[in-house]
Image (cartoon, rainbow, N blue to C red; front, side):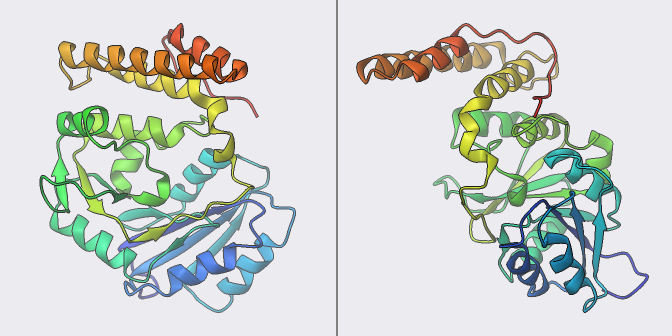
Length: 289
């Protein structure tokens, strides 16, 4: 990237207490074969050495910007803050405990540049037999791919690349904890074609400090998002398809409840029972910390 020139892609790295991992994450971005990028790191009031480590890298490379929040914003609000600092055509999230392969940025941006009708893209997808990647899905095709195919809206931000103007137009991530990416992909897919890309471009780290380990606590929120977008007047699916999805979900929950009873898993049974009777209240509520 030439100083003063708009980069092709802004790599956004939000961080909170990731001193054990952020160095490797930064180095993975710097090793990219795509050189036309800026790396924007936003620390969310870490209490360890995360900020100092990021600043040490910024001193050595002009493409790195490091920002520190005055107060803790939380995961998705901090992602939005990072996006406001970006100047690139594309936004690419790489979390401070994940990595991107050297070819990842180059392949993802090249695929997006060749498929200009797509407003956003998702990678790390399993192979399907119908056709090879990459290919573009319309809103209806995206919803069908998720609800009747191998799935799509479950991917983490690490797997996404988004045109910056599309991100701004969509309003960015909601403040929902844990589930905001799931909600964002439903929302983006209503308005913009999505480019599907293969696996092997990013690496998602799993460790005990991740909130995803308590994903079950947010199952009602996932249910709320699903039902509200299926009932949205803009939903591209037919009435018959929506009925099939709801009926299938009920049958799935029934199987879970029967299994829980057989295994004397009464806590899980109670949780699935609440989901069975759950009805959305008409608006998405953010989870309190």
